[in-house]
Image (cartoon, rainbow, N blue to C red; front, side):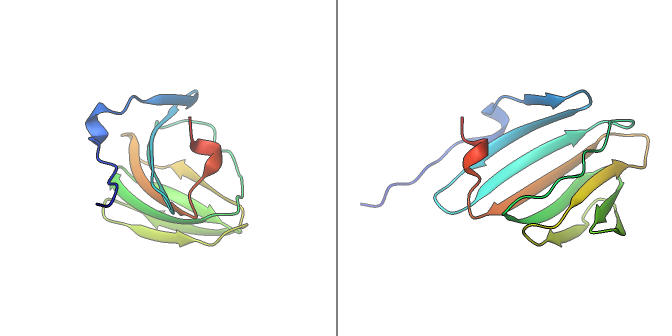
Length: 112
């Protein structure tokens, strides 16, 4: 029998990352999923990491700066950020942004 990791994202606690930013994390064997909530006015933090990142916007709108290019995303918007590329998001609307990220390979730094 195969081992299956089952959970409910609603039961996972929010983790405060910094002022105006919190997240929930779920990790499998080869990928990590993160749900981020970003408040209007949060301080963007440019960063890069050795993971490919797929972004899916569930709520709100924001500008993703990826290697100096800006991509405006609204609900339903998708974006792929290659590994080792500097990026960040700025919330442009009046409501919080909820974005779902998928990282490959799994993010060991997110495992608690």
